[in-house]
Length: 223
Ligand code: FE
Image 1: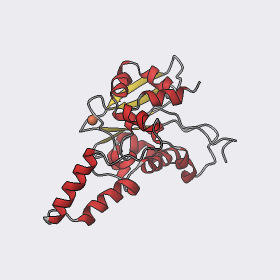
Image 2 (image 1 turned 135 degrees about the vertical axis):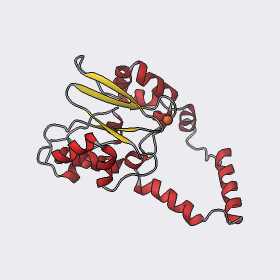
Image 3 (image 1 turned 45 degrees about the vertical axis):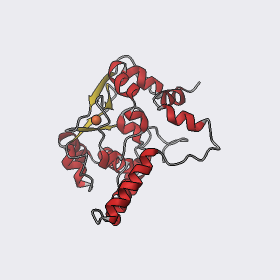
Image 4 (image 1 turned 60 degrees about the vertical axis):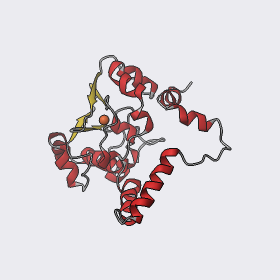
């Protein structure tokens, strides 16, 4: 039985399960979506917002901000020892070197996984998350079970995501706040020594940068 599938599902909110059971049903927009649409229409009509600005914000979160940015940061740190040092010393500045920063990423801290230490990120209070490098948080990150259990039983949570840590490995849990957002620098997988930075970036997943997964070498061996 797959621990990953059951674990991730365990952190999902009920509405997801409901729609999955009813695949043929074309859902009407939710009350919230309708209310947002109505508000947007009124604000545009009154000249208080420019629809182009709204489109630009949506475009930013759909294509410019997201975990590919974080993956590039990780790949650079794996490829360039001096960059890794700068990243661990002042993550906000080092991330800005690659052109990423801004809202919800003003004060970044990068925590490094090693054979002896595994880092896990949570926001116990709500859903604080480093938007410029990871995009918007996944549903499970915002769920009450993840937020509470990541602190109470991090090893159990990690097992459900398919990560089993040896007894000697120390787990550090970092609680994000409105002030500080964390990013995990995962361990570089063995067998990737000859890979380019772009190839490395393609291996790095969002979950690995939250600390609920490890980065694996490509199947069939690295290039
Ligand atoms: Fe929060």
